[in-house]
Amino acid sequence: MLYTTLYWLTWRSFENFFSLPSTEEGVA
Image 1: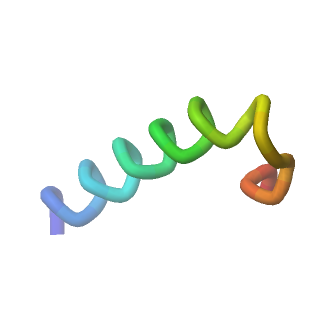
Image 2: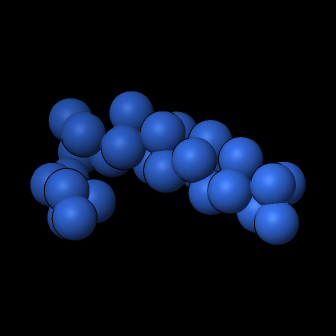
């Protein structure tokens, strides 16, 4: 369960960091 949360947080950070200037669909 811990790894799932860590993976989710990392993926969310990357997605937000890279998709911020491109699209604002990952705001939620």
